[in-house]
Length: 153
Image (cartoon, rainbow, N blue to C red):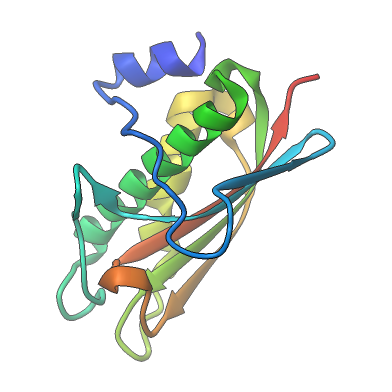
């Protein structure tokens, strides 16, 4: 099943591609790799999840935040490639979690991004990953996700 049909089957739609919020571009392609800038949980003109996990957010709500980050990333991918069908595989995900000092459950939060990528792309969605707790993210976002993917020839 193609990724866009899988999104529909999951009851999900891609938001409009987020614009760059600084001096960078949303994606850069080199060879068969597409590097995606970090995306936050901004949807329909507003932040969906703000504040640190362990204070303002739970692991469960932050998991949802990471899913929204992936939808934003995929919107940028579709804008760059024309179709999610051109994704050969997800190579690497960097996940950042706005969290209280000492927070050690970043992997459980970033599973929101990883699990959704596997649901959408199947085996091609399995990837290497880093999940890191940080002391703040742009706009107070609870999560930020960066993705590197391989493009089909």
